Image (cartoon, rainbow, N blue to C red; front, side, top):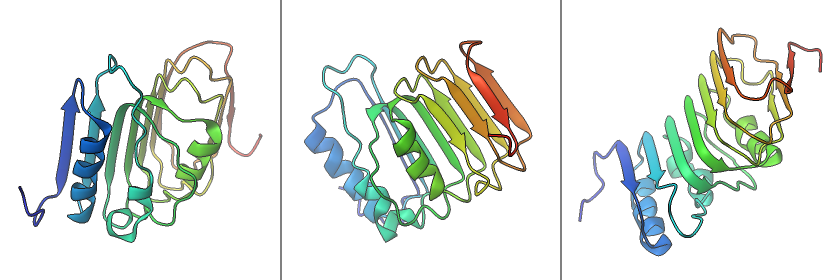
Length: 174
């Protein structure tokens, strides 16, 4: 029953929830112009939850969200128009392919920190030069990953844990 006024952080961790309720809670959080959104669903959920990417396309949340952390859901963005203030993106056990990730990253020019853990649909991770503020990248246990291409000029911290067969390209040599 919160009015949403003054709400800056929305964190939800749960083992099981109906997608309809979760969508309505996220809609409420989006309308309050939150700065941080954390959704941590259980890995044991019986059905896959599809994060409503349309929330991030809206001018309301797209221009205010700075921190986004998702765990155990599908994230299928088709287009983005905002996300001008997103500085930290953490994806753990999130289903997102390289095209969807590329779409997300291409609209997140303020991104400073990116973490991906067990994002097992991503085959190729491309960090474009438009992420000129990105200083930290962590990629762990992404089983399908075959290549990482990094062209972020201010990257000072990179942590990789996974298959040694993954090809890595740094700078403009891809």
